Amino acid sequence: MAIKLSDIFGSADLNINNQKLEEMFNKTKDMAETVSKKSAERLEMSRKMIECLDAKTKLSKLYEKYGEMQYNSFVGEKIDSVELEGIANRIADLKEKIDELNVEIDEAKVEFSEAVVNATKKTRDVFQKEFDKMNKAEVIIPTDEVEVTEAKTE
Image (tube, rainbow, N blue to C red):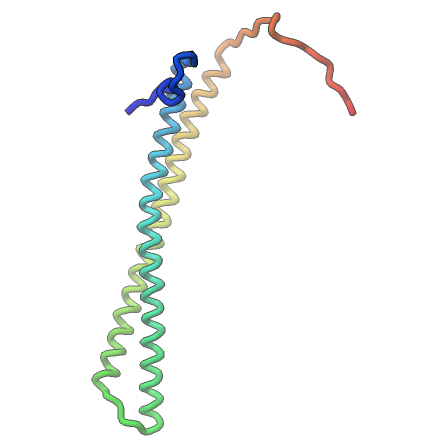
């Protein structure tokens, strides 16, 4: 979907018919859309980070419960070995889940960073080519519109 500057400003009095300006605007819009998509991916990464923090909190509580049961066993209290084994298994499961989430988060961070860098480089290269073309073009400035003054030193 191409948007023209006249559509944005909505003024018939605004006479902007510069194709290059339109192209640059559209390229900027494309970059903004790319960043928007990457923001959604970043949001998913944040969700995984929260899930990982939640798992770490649960793990901490399980360690506390496991340690309490071990201490009670040490001081001679009878403990339920099935319950202790269940806690140990849940600890192992949570540690595995945390490791998996950390790998996913790290991969998402790298992918996100690479995608943003690539999109930025691509946009920069396009703008640089356009800028170079504009600099090579001959610019004629009417001399009756230019006022030359001496620089003042203070």
